[in-house]
Length: 120
Image (cartoon, rainbow, N blue to C red; front, side, top):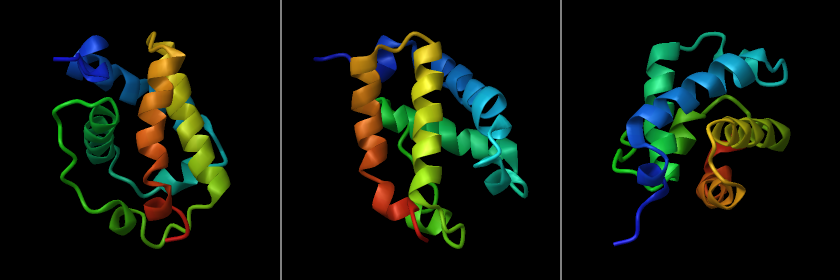
């Protein structure tokens, strides 16, 4: 059986590091998107994001939160916001040694959700 990207890169432990880096070093320092998280319970957000990134890497943690469109309702996320977050996810994965080919594969899953996230 083919190894998932999740397994290949160290599973939950690595995903946890990616999530912390994603928020602490990238998203929350980016003034184009950090305002979306002003009123957010970041512990809960990190848990959701951990499951989501696990999903994007083909891991076992099935995302069970609200639907993506419900979760982003009322936020009116524009393409530039979506793109910024996708870029931060790319950079966080790259920071922890995920190859470009594998990042592309994960971001393809993220991209498939664009219509559920934007303009809600």
